[in-house]
Amino acid sequence: MGRSIDLNADLGEGYPTDEAVLDVVSSASIACGFHAGTPLEMLNTARSAASRGVALGAHPSYFDREGFGRRDMDVPPDQLLAILAYQIGAMSSIAAAAGSALTFVKPHGGLYNRAAVDPSTAESVVDAVRLAGRGSLALLCPGGSTLAQKAESEGLPFFLESFADRAYRPDGTLLSRSEPGSVLTDPDLVAERAVRIATEGAVTACDGTVLPMKSDSICVHGDTPGAPTLARTIRMALEQAGVAVRSFTAS
Image 1 (cartoon, helix red, strand yellow):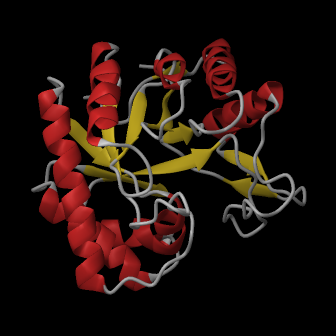
Image 2 (cartoon, helix red, strand yellow):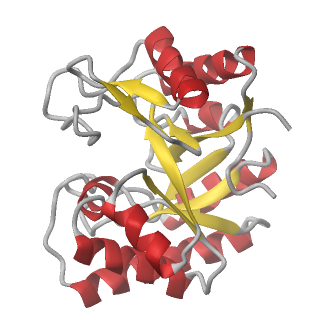
């Protein structure tokens, strides 16, 4: 088998372009209601994904609808474990109701960023995925992160994610959305970055530094302007480069 990589999107957040994005991606991280989405949106998105053979993931967050889950928050470990188990359990049931099954978990926004560097938060995330998933779920997380290291040490299956539509700092973390140029919307640029990640394992940071970027899955955000065009352009470019688009959870 030749080279392959997953193309994922964060969906179910109330944007009307989800269906068009689902036509292109191989995995979908679905909002679980704490930063966006409703039970009905979760079910509809899961059904749409399942009908296309797109792998289903839970996209849990802090309880932060006002801030779209992108604010950094101090949440005690037991409380964080509880809200994550709650969201993962809900999405697992929704997936079953859609005639499919949940296969992975990807934290959202502020939780994702904090778990990438904070050992306590990473531990809560790993524990929630392991316990709520009863060993059947994988974790999607950034490479070289505290979260990835914790998953590895606990024996939790995990896969590494990169972002085609977000700028990186020289240290490999994402440039804050408050900074100019943090969100990339040019289809050709985004596709070029995706191909380089998939074929060379590298990406260019905001200052021109070339960063190593091992990745099992490339993300395009469902709320990025022009998300369907970005996703289509990325997929076309990957396939033209000889890289098949295939879910990282596919057997």
